[in-house]
Amino acid sequence: MNFLIALMVIVPILCALFLNLLHKKDRTIKVVTVLLALTLPALPLLANYGLHYFGGYVPLVENPTLANNLPPLITDTALNTFHPAITYSFQSAQQLFVFIFGLVALLAIFVSVFETRRPSGVYAYMMFMGVAAVTAVILTDDIFNLYVFFEIAALATVGIVLVSNVKGNYETALKYMIIGSIVAPLLLLGIALLLGVTGNVNITDIIYSIKNGLVDPQNPVILMACALIVFGWLYGSGLPPFHTIKSAIYSKALPSGAALMQAFSVFIFVAMGIIILRIFSYLPFSQWVILGVSLMAMILGITMAILQTDLKRMIGFLAVGELGYIGIGLGLSTAYGITAGLFQAVNEAMITAILFLGFGVVLYQTGISDTRKLGGMMVKTPLVAFLVLLGGFAMAGVPLLNAFQSKLMLIQGSIKAGLPELGVIMILLSIVTFMTFMKAFHAVYLRPMPDELVIKHEKIPKATIIAMLVLLGVCLIFGLFPQVATSYLQPLATSLAGGIL
Amino acid sequence: MNLYDLIVKKIKDIQGVGDESPVTNISTSSMLTAEITLISSILVALIMLRLVNKVLMIVAVLVVLFTVLTAMPLMPKFKKEQNDSLASMMFYIVIALAIVITLFYWGNLNV
Image (cartoon, rainbow over all chains, first blue to last red; front, side, top):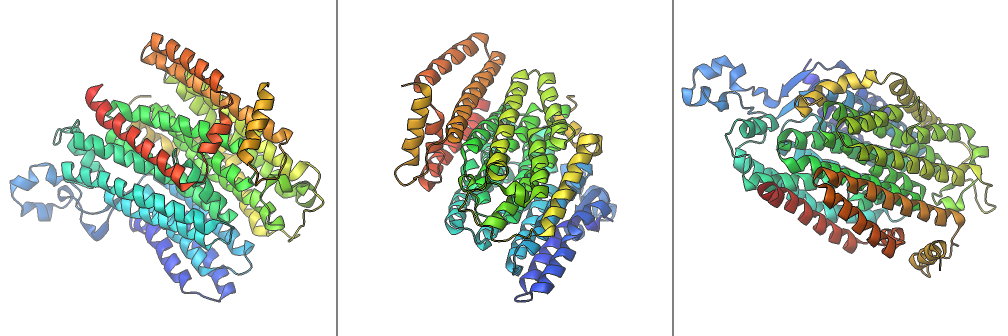
C-alpha cells in the first residue's frame, strides 16, 4: 500500500485544516484531535516499504510504454533513470523515525488537549502542520520539496510559540522568524546552486550526477552549495550558533508544544544530516564539520544547561547538547557509528519529551518554572516525580534505559573509528548532564517547599501521566532490547557509510 | 582573590543590579562545574589534532591551556555572550556562516 506513504504527510495537513475550522466547540476539538492524532503513529506501521511518485510520474526506465516512443538521446542516457516526480522514499529507518515521531506527536497533542481548559483549534492546527512538515522532510527524496517543508516546519514552530500563552513568547517568536528569514534564503540559494550545476532536485539523481562524472565534484559552486545547505541544517536543528534561540523557543512554549518542537529539531537534524552525508560525504571536510559542530553543540549546550535557573530553558539547552551525540554518530561515518547516532536520535526525541511533559506538570500546578522559587513538589506529585526521575536517568544514560545503549554504542563507535577522545568527552558530558538533571530535580522535588509557593491546580491531568508512561515504556523496551530499534536503522547506516563498518 | 571568589564576583556582575536573587552555593558550583567541563572538553578535543600532526597537537594544547588559565573564569563570559540579544545572535550567525563557507569552499579546494 504505497499510497500510504503520501498519506503520512497528507493526513496531518488535512487534520490541521479541518481542526482550524472548529471554533468554540471545545469537546468536539478534543475528541476529533485525539482521534486524528492516532493516525500519526499508525500510518507508518501499515505502509509498505518503497517509493511514492507524486502524480504517478515514474522514471522512464519503469515506464516502457512511454520510453519506446522516445529517441535514444533520452532513453540511452542517464535521463532514462532520473526521477521526474517528487519522490518519497519509505524504508525501515524512515518507518522507525516516522513511527517514533508520530508517537511523540500523538502524546504531545493528547496532553495539549487535556492540559488546557479551552482547547484551541489553532494550536492543534500548528501542531499538525508541523508534524506534516517534519514527516515530509524525513520522507522526501527531493531537495526543493525538503526546503518547502523545512520552511513550513519553521513557521509551525513560530506559530506554536505565538499561540502559547507564555510571557515573552511574541518577542522570542519574532527573533526566530527574523533569523529564519536570513538563513532560509541561504539554504534555498544552496539548493538553487545545486540545481544549477546538476540540473536536478532529486537527491538520488544529484548523487548519480556527482558520482558518475556528469558534473565536476570539486566544482566551486557545489562546494558553496554544500556550505549553504550545512548552514541551513544548523538553523533547522538548533546547532551552534542557533542553540540560544532554539532553547529560547522551547522555553516560550507550553510543555506539550516544547515536547513536540524538540522532536521537530531532532528529526530535521537527522533527515538533513542524512542528506548531507549522502550527497557530500566525498568531501573530506564534511565529516569534520559535522563532528566539530556536534562537539560544540554538546559542550555549549550542556555547560549552558547547568547554569540555567529556568526549568524549560535548562531542558532546552540539554536537548541541544544531546543533538551533539547524534551528530557525533553521523560524523564518525562508520556503519556502527551512524547506527548509534540514529538510535540516539530516536531515543532523545522520546526522553526530552518526557522531561518537558514531566516538568510541565510543575508549571501546570504552580505557574512557575524558575527553580529558585520551587520546592517540595515530591509531596504533591510523587508519581510524576518518579517518572521524571526515570526520564532524567534515561537522558544521562543510566543502564536498562534506551540512551544507555545508544551512548554506549556511540562510545564504542568512536573508539572503533580511532577517535577515543570523543568517547571520553561523551562520558564526561553525560556525567554533567546527570548532574544538571539532579540539580533541577533537587530544586523542584526534594528541597522544602517555599512558603510563598502557591499550588494553583492540585489535580494533574491523567493525559500527562499516560503520555509519560507510554514514552518510558518504549524507552525501557529499547533499553532492554536495543536490536528492536537498531535492526531498522542498520540498512540505512550501512548504505551511508559506504561499506565502512 | 581565589577562583571561587572570582566566580562569585563574575556571577554578580552578570546578574547586574536588576536581579536581586543572591549568589547561592548551587549557582557557584554550577558555574565551577561548567567551567571545568568546558576546559577539559576543549583540551581533550584538541588531542584529536594528533591525526593532523603530533607537534601541532602538543603546541595547541599548551597554548590553549595557558590561554585558558590566564583568562579564567571563562564560563561567565560565555554565558554573557550566549544571551537572548538579537544583535549578539546575529553576530555569531554571520561568524558561523563565514567559517562554514571558508571550510567548505577554501578548505576543499586548497587542502
